[in-house]
Structure formats: C-alpha cells, structure tokens
Length: 613
Image 1: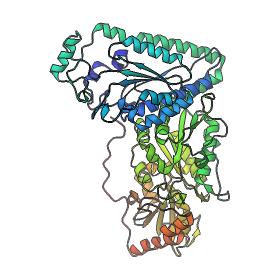
Image 2: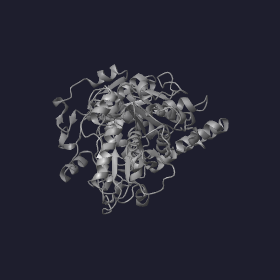
Image 3: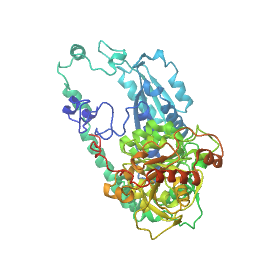
Image 4: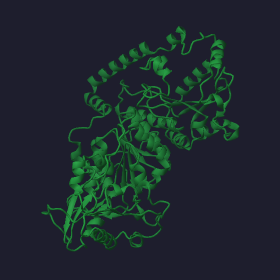
C-alpha cells in the first residue's frame, strides 16, 4: 500500500522483503520504512500506539487551534487483526480511549477468524463488538469485507460522524482469499507457491508476472498529486495562522522540530549539602515541574500512582474528554498500555511524553518499553520505589533484577541519581537526548544532598564525587587513593558513611548515576576515575550482575527482598555503614601488599556498529 500510494518505496524494495538492509523488514519498523510511524511487530502495540496518536491530536488541537484556524485536525486509523484483539495491552489502551472519548480514532478490525494456531474457535470466542461497546466505543459490523468495499467506505463515514467516541468497524474477511490455502493459518506467514500464486493471478484476471501491478490499480492508488495539493493547502493555512498568531506558530514549529527553548536548563533546581535531604522521588517532583514549566510539550502521567510517584503537574490540569488542553494523563492501572500510548504520543510529534509507575512494575510494561528503545523514542519513564528500601510492600514490589535488565537493553539509559542535583542532571540529560529512551529510578526513602554533586556531572555518567581520607572529607586530596567505592542512587551516601569508618585509608567515592552513559566514555576518562592497581568495591541495593566491569568486589543483593521496615531491611541485608566498611576492609586486606588487577586490562570488546542497519 505504501508503494502504491507513492511513498519512497520502489518495487525493488518490495522484492527484497525481509532481506538485510531492505526498506521492507519482517515487521513494520518506523526507522526502516517511509510512511511507517510506529514499530508494531509485537501484536497490540499498533492499536495502543494509535490511542497515543489520537490523544496528541486532541491535545494539540486544543492548544493551538484558533477560531477559523484549524491547523491540527486529523484522524488516526488502525488496521488490526484477531491477534491484536487478544493482547491485554489493547484492552488497556482501548478502555482508556473509550473513557477519553477519542472521536477521531477509527479502528478497522480484520475479523478473519484465523490465528497462527488455527481457527479462533480454539481460544477466542468472545463477542469483541460487545466488549468495545462496554468500553464506550461506537461499533459497526461489515459482514462482507472481501467484496463489499462500499460498505466499508460507508462505515468509515459513519464513524467520522461520531465525534464523542472512538469507533470500531468489525469487518469479516477471508485470509488468503483466492489461494488454495485461503481460510487457513498456513497462508499467514508463508509465501504462496509459484503454482498457487499463478492461479490467484489467473482467477482475478491479472498478468501472470510476479509483482505485476495493472495501470488502473496504480493510477487509482497513486496519491502523490493529491498529497502534494493537501500539503500546499495546509501550508497556506499555516501561513495565515502564523500571520494572525506569530507566537503560537513559532511555538508550534519549535515543538515539531524537537528543539528546546533557550535557557531551559536554568529552570532546574540546584542544591547544596545544607539543603534538606529528601527522597529522590521528591526531588523528581521538583525537577519534573521545573521542566514542565519551561517545556509546555511535556505531557504525561502515572499508572494510578500519582501520590506515590509524585508526578502531578502543578501548572496544568488533567487531560480528560472535556478538558483536552490538560497535560496530565490519568492512565489508570494500565502499565503496559501506558507505555504503548506514550510511544504513540512521541511518534505524533509536538509533545514529549513521560509516564510513571513503581520501578518493579516496569516489568508489566516492558514489551512497550523495549519498543520505545528500538524506535529511538525519547520517552521518559519515571520509576519510583527503586529498591528493597520501599519497605513493607515486600518482595513482590522490590526490584532486584531490573537494573541489569534495563542496562542490557540497547538505546536504554537508566538513571539512578544519588541526590537532588543528580536528579536535575538526570532530567536534563534525558530531555536533551530525544532519540534515547530513559528510565529514572527514584527512591522512596530520603537521601542527603552530597558535597561535590552537580547536575552537569551526570552528563559523564559517572564522576569522582569525594575523597574520604582517614575518615574525613578531604577537598584538597589529589593523590592516588587506597580504595575506590563506586555506587549509585541511595547507596552513594552509604558508601561515604562506610568510607568514614576506615581509618588510615584514602577512599575515592565515585557516583555513577548512569552506567549507560559512562559505558560510552573514553578509556582515558574511565582510567582517570579507576586508577590501575587500586581495589574497587561496587555498592548497589540490587543484583550485582554486570558490576564486575567496574569493580573487584560487589556489594549488592542477589536474592529477593522481604517485607519489613527500612531499618530492619538495612540491618538484615547489611546495607549499613558498618557492614559495607567491613567488606571494604576485606577487599583491602585481600590485595594487601600487591596491586589489584587493572579493570581495563582486557581485550577490546567487539562492538557491532550502533544503529539498525
């Protein structure tokens, strides 16, 4: 269809389907194929993305349109199948779409009764139309989608006439129509045999030639002239809009170019050690609202955890059916749908989405989070309650493996800031890099503001925070330390307290708010932080997996947590200064009289070129 309608997709690209470097990969990829807005290989993502696209359209229309100047005015169309309708993520997103009354969202459901296992009567016999009516959608049925094309056209026109509800058009079709394999699962993913393809072409009176397109079909579908005319019409509308509303037009252009306003970083708070310590989720509340005050494109919300995630925006109201100008989204308990909708928001342009949940529940959303990273969508995931120190909610809520899981994901940047300055720096780094997906892992418990931290330091991923010499902070120390302790998040202050218990020892404290950024730094910079021969201990209240890259010994938690108070958990699992200091002393004793192995004295890693093709 993209080839026929005139996108930059020549017939040669179709012939290279699913081959290396082809513009036609095995599933839709926004970075590979002109005209593809979102990557939708995992079933259900496309429909859920479309909810985000429709939200963005409705919000931007409310923000920018003026009387007589409708510069944002489009429909969002979806083609989906039985498999999409079975995915839980579509239920989450469709439920929210009905609540929000997204009248410009139209879904064409290809109801062909076939899945990969076989007929849908094996596993999927629900009444989808009734389900969507219950969601608050306008629902129609077309009984003959094979040949009654006018019925489909009329159904779309009726759907467009319903402005207060999203629309579902359930269309009964036959998969593989005309093939000897029609109406079977075998025609889903396998090419037709030469004989079968020849017979299909003969049945429909087509020339017996692979990739043959009749002139009448090519002329019917070619939309290049029509598209150019509509583009010129919109450009004229926008010129008139810009003449009448120059400030709004300039803001519109800035947003869609993805540019950030001048001096936007100055809005972020900076803290000193004398400032009151807070949980990093509380510092995040300040930083997020600072960002939202200077970046009106920042739109998002929480999966029913606003009072815990602290993501409410003070300068705006909720985005609801009757208040689309609001920038705060109430996603409900729909983590996967929330992430997929955020991908749609980003894909639309003009808005920069954030969304929030408990850190452990990113696991619910991981299917869409991974697509964010693959698609190079700069979605901000705000993840609070980032360790066992969320306390009494226990191991079902306490993340252990999430840090290494996300750090191993390409184009995913996990930030675990240690104090208020690092929180501000994490937001700045995440917002500056619009093609990088970011997760900000934030504490429930309070942490102090640290001497030596700064928002700017986060840009390196890791940096020398302090030197503790003979139990005290030494601002003048420039020598080679006896020990390095590298830590993230709430364990940075723990590392400092532990270092102060080590007498007669100089300890370098490295804060590493983003290992993913630090991994990208030069070896020269890395060696400047981790001197050759100096024993290094890593401290993080999570799985130790991966920390051997930057430490000789690892202090973490390679088991599930427990339900208890924070004080009890610190005592039981040893996350207190006495235990950490004891482990540090053991490491010093182990290498006493000899140098520790250089962390970087290893063969150069094999790196496959960054990117997609």
